[in-house]
Image (cartoon, rainbow, N blue to C red; front, side):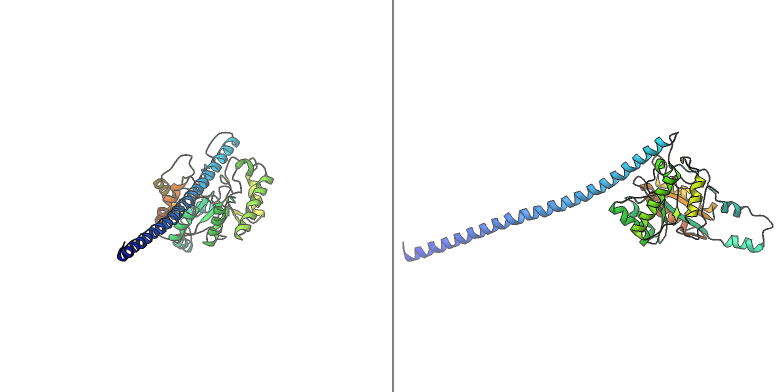
Length: 322
């Protein structure tokens, strides 16, 4: 073999070695990159799936809790019925007195009546739920404040919801800790214990000492084994005001109800009252209420001499019992 042939052969071998090195490096790079990419993809899918499972678990837990509560309440009440059914009483004493006007009314009083701004209070019972944030987003978008009569929940999402209700400027009311009729209304002592537990818990979480209460089933409920006047008297002694309602959204029905029906139920009777307190629910099975809420707010805002307010010390309490 000539010197030239040896040189060409050596160059050929060098090129071949370089190609092999490149192939080896590419293979090694792929061996590292492909598992890494797959790991990132699988990790992302795992996190996403875990999040979805967590949301589903939360929804399942809420629905399960609602079912257990419903079974407990139905078993407690003699005749099975919707434990959220409302009283036939829908007018407050103030509404009744102000509509009973006489021809001899002083001219100044008549003018005050004409200038009166109707007050509408959007109230949500039973929360927090998986929809609380969505409700709060809608209220924020429409620059409206509402009132949430909450129950006792300790999950992180519920704690965050309590805090956001307060941070967003809404009124934090109480609706019992357990919302189980058999526990809340077993005796006056049981009622007091339940109330204190919720009031202290909300203060611990939010720093707000709530002074507004809504009885489970309303003050006119027939489930309590205790004379409701005793419980009302106790609330008064504790400087706690209780609120019922005079407009029912209908979302407490035991069967699905459409958003259109909820809107109609809420809006159609507002003009009948100087103070309209609308009963709605913030619960896992009440998404129709969330769907209806923007239209309810917009319809009320379009009414003349009408404003939407949160319950406060200045609110005249709508109460089914005197």
